[in-house]
Image 1 (cartoon, rainbow, N blue to C red):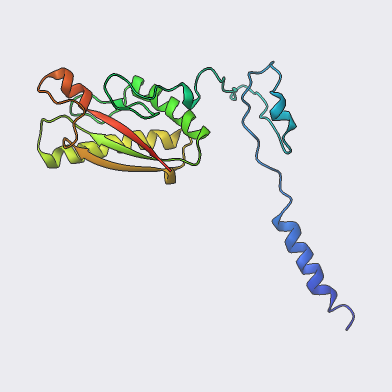
Image 2 (cartoon, rainbow, N blue to C red; image 1 turned 180 degrees about the vertical axis):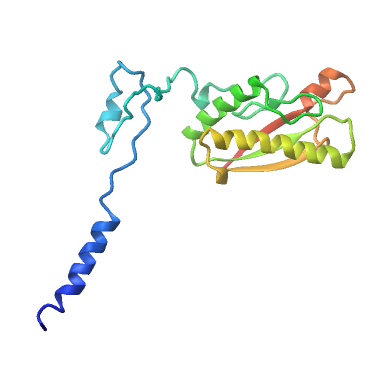
Length: 189
């Protein structure tokens, strides 16, 4: 009986180690279209386990969704790798165009996992300061929530509302107001 006692801690330790490790690695998302050969670098990685293409799984084509393909700035001067998302007057709903832009942003952010983003909500000059701060917050959260639904980690996204305090374009016409109703993305590390 005295001989079996020293074995008990060893067996317990071995059982704990077996339970903690040795699990299967999560699959790597395939970046090739079914029927195409995977890139040589993908098959050379240890633990590479591409997803099987099934009826509900489609490989993402790499047709210009990399962050380098985003314009570094546009004529409006927003700048940065992520384009602004526009909103209708007095609304925080995402349009189809805004969703498409955010889908490109999600792909870019998945390729740049070390970066964090502040989603800024902006409004045009009409309305009170308090109202526009609340509306700007709703716009920033709508953009952030959609990015999170696309797989971007919520911990990487922060929201802030500037209301009407930081207009992109100074002007009192519909064209200027439309440019100021936006969610802007400030990229940092």
